[in-house]
Length: 137
Image 1 (cartoon, rainbow, N blue to C red):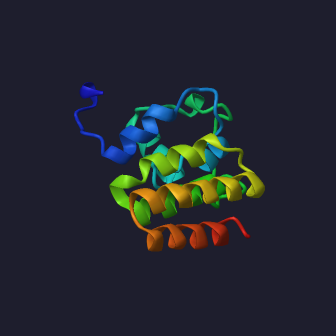
Image 2: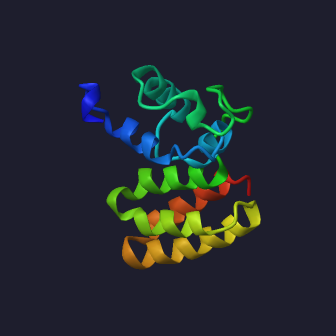
Image 3: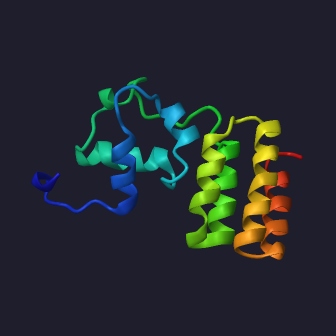
């Protein structure tokens, strides 16, 4: 990376870490919630010469058909927004669950209890309410 003569942003470094030649851009776009605008970031890395179009399994840089964030990534974003540095345990619980509204609703209930015990009841209620809205419950 040093031979390119340019420092990468934190977002670009995070994106570079997930490119493995196996995942398609659509898969990365749906699962890589910690890289803001993953498609644009990958296009930047392509233009800078850090990756080539063969680094992605589908061989192309195109916007995924469903460009909206996954349910898990929405919940992770809510946790990060509300809890800041205390969000990691909640995000881990969300990531470990199945990506179905039913499974995520159960995880939300468990996370509410954890937030209530470690932060506050008000924050727990807010997280549960916003989480349920995000998954359509």
